Image (cartoon, rainbow, N blue to C red):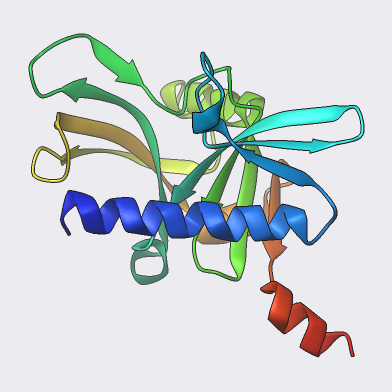
Length: 173
C-alpha cells in the first residue's frame, strides 16, 4: 500500500470518528488547524474537551490483532519519534472497521505497555518491527500487537459498534 493509499485510509478513519462524536452532539475540530498540538481531532461539548489520535488498522480483521505503534526511527537516522506514548493524547481510537471502534486512554496504553515490558499479563502479546520506508519517510516502525478478543473484554478499553448517521436513522425509525 502506498503512502497516499495509507493516508486516505487514515482520513477515512478520522471521518468515522468525527461522525461517531457528531452523532452524539459533540463538536469536532481537525487538530491540524490548531498550532502546537499533536493528535488528529479535538472533541468538545460544554466545558469538556479532549484530544483523540485516530489509527485506522485495516489489517486487524484479517490478523485478529490490533497494531499499536509505539515509536519509529526516521529514515535519516534522527532521533526516535514516539507515537502512542504521547501524553498529549487523551484518547487513542482504533478504527478496525466503519462499525467497530476501540478507545483507549493514554494512561491505559502506557500501563499496558509497562505490563508487557514487565512480562505481566495484559492486552499486548508480541512486539513487532515493520519496515515502513516504502510508505513514508520512516525507516523502522515499532509496535505491539493486541489480540482483538482481549480488547473486546478489557475493562479499560471502550468498545463501540458505530453506525453511520444514515444507518442509525434507519435503525431507529
